[in-house]
Length: 205
Ligand code: URA
Image 1 (tube, rainbow, N blue to C red):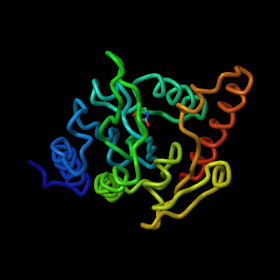
Image 2: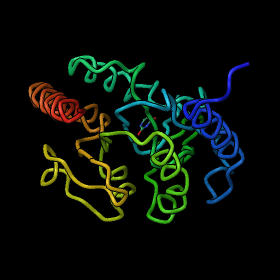
Image 3: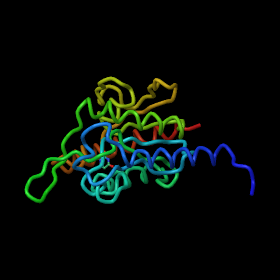
Image 4: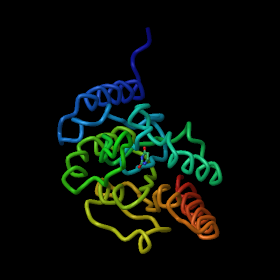
């Protein structure tokens, strides 16, 4: 058997981190969620995408961005010529936060304490994957990565520096597009989202 390479070690460290996160009790959200939804994708990915938190379907599947927001995300990255199989996809918060309404589970926004508690995981994902470019999808991801509140409208479309020296690009969350009632606005905002993704992709050297 050949000696392990750095890549093997990173992959093993990532798998150990994912297993550890599966038992996370760093905040109270684990109590009602089905499971931890950890990031997925190659550990040597050049691009990392960070969402807010798993939704109802992600909570059941254990995989990020597989529900309705995931469908929008998939369409948008495809339009920006980004291959989902080659990028790392994760969330700022790894457990689904919701309010039960009858049989339905309605998404609830993670608060600052929950985002802070979960930074423990995203920081280690960042350290292992070391992406050239990280894309924050929405305000929660941006807050988690930058450690401050950001206005997406002001900060989108340009490179920002992460505390660890990496580069981040901020754009909207795909759920924002799902919520827009006006089809023309929806289409225009989708196109803008794709433009942001193209800029981020072009920043990968
Ligand atoms: N929204 C997110 O932010 N992440 C997911 O994984 C799914 C929906």
